[in-house]
Length: 173
Image (cartoon, rainbow, N blue to C red; front, side, top):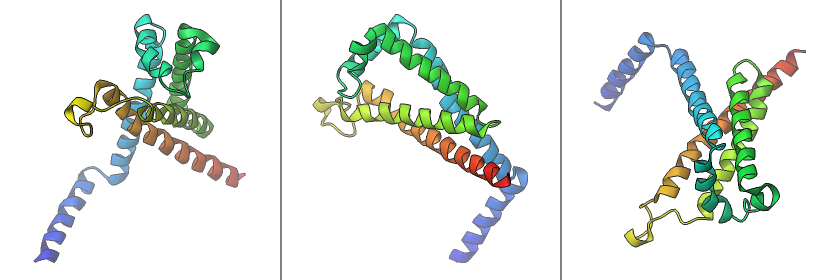
């Protein structure tokens, strides 16, 4: 009985592949994942040049020991503009990554460092509603930062895929 259910399930799965081949689905998924990283980087990067974003980052930067040096070094507006510039630059590199493996390596590396840093902020700041008993009751700061786990994963994927492409190109010469 189990084998029959499995084979029916397998036939259904293979039927999907006939409608839309797995390679096409993978290509679409790769494009959506890339857009999922590029859009936040571009949009939030541009917002870094507004007072709203300068104010929104104050508690995050001030209360994170490994980021707090940014304000004495660059000032609030300068530090925020630096982050915005890095985000926009990274987005541009990631946009170029399908055509340039080297852009993918650099964009994936900077994106990975960016999102690793923002994910690490969750360890420095309270992200749980203590009055509700903590985990799994995540507060707005935690909700804002939690999305960066997936953006980190996509950035690491782009980095690895681009490194493999550079390696393959090097072996051809």
